[in-house]
Structure formats: C-alpha cells, structure tokens
Length: 280
Image (tube, rainbow, N blue to C red; front, side, top):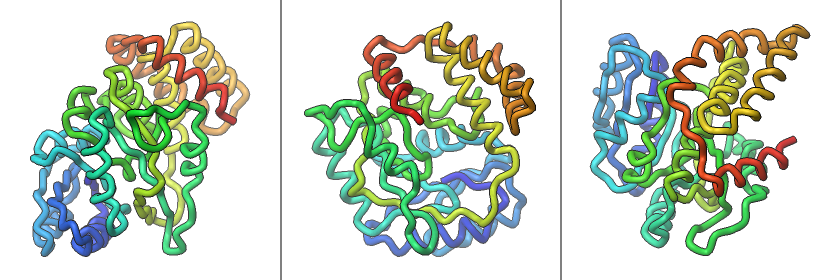
C-alpha cells in the first residue's frame, strides 16, 4: 500500500485488512507524509511494516514494497481500497494453478453501496481471446489498487516506471508483463473495494492524458505516437480542458520517455491494436 498525508483513510484501510481471515502481512510505503501519518500507521494493531521514504516517489513506491515482500504473490491496496474476504485466497489459488499468470485484475466495487466500477465492464468485454493457460479474460489494463501480482513477474517487468510517476501508470506495466510472456487477466470472482474520498482530484485528467501519450512513445510504433501527439496538440490549440497541461507535461518528460523506448513484440502490439479499435 502507498499513502501520503491521508492518515485517516489509511487507518480505515488497515482496519479492513485486519478483518480479513487471511491475516496477510502488510507493507505500507509512505510517500513523504508528515510524521503524523507515519506514527499513526506504525501504531496500528495490525503491525504493518512501514517504509518511510521521506519523499514522494508516486507509483514507484509500490516497487519498493514488492522488493521488500517475502511472499510469492503481492496484492496491492491504496490507502482507500481493500480486499473482500476470501479474495486473496482465491487469487493465490489461481496463481498456483496457472504458472504463467503474472497479474490478476480484480472486480472493483466503489463506495458504501458497492457500485460497479465502470472499468469492470471494459475489462470483462476485452476483445483479446481467452488463453487456455490463463484464468479469466486477457487484458492490457487494470486498476492499480485492485490488482494482485506474481512477485517474480512484477520484478521481471521492472514494476511501475518512474517516467510516469503517477496516474494511468498501469498500461505500461501491463505491456511490459505481456512482452515478457506473463499473462495479465481480469478475474471478476476476485473482488476489491474502493472508497475514494468525495470530490475529484485536481489535475488528474491532465496527468492521465500525459501518461497515455508517454506510454505510446515508450512502447508503441512511432507513427502512432506521432499521431497521438498531434491530436493532443490540436486539442490544446482548441482550448480543450486539460489538454494544454497534458501536452506540456508530456513534452517535459519526452526525452526521458524516448530514452526508455522499447518497442513491443508483435504479438503484444497486435493485442494493443485490438484494444485500440475496441475503445470508445
């Protein structure tokens, strides 16, 4: 779990995790919170291991948690999400049964009413064909706070990329897992609960658009990356909301993205194109 300056939320999540019959060991990565958050988490009865970074590494904080984990499988929570009873046992059984499974994307229920996250339907209707050696439906996307990984596969793929920092960082990791032969699938019988705080996060849309473009530059064909850059530039010129901020952010990080460019194997690029065509 990663957190930053949301100690009430993280303590609620720890309470929920403590209620799980599995009693999983928990690692909390603090991305540069005040001492109040770190002290409160360390005092929680669950006894989580706390990695206090002293600075904000964004999604890369999850990489450090996986590196410190001692279990073969790692389930991610954010400080506003937790797992349903039985979910982790079901996930572990699937990883045991399917050695190629690298990442399992769970079904996500949102808020106290347990509303279906819209991403559930997107994942369930993935156009990628089923694989006999994988459970569920193959996908190339997931929600970071509702995913379980095989630790070795996650480390093999390099985890979350520091160029993206945070916001829409999941697609690049899914690409990198698939490129190395690991399966990424959606299994709706594994359930996570997500209780985000009311109200949106200012700037989040711009960051997600920025990272979608950077992901294209890092892994997709150059012609596609150029088309998407031109489309975002046109949107910014029209004054479209968040487009200008997304473009400026992408251009600032573009040299680093190009430095880490690694074209996908054709089988993965083919899958990515299928998903592109299915997108609304």
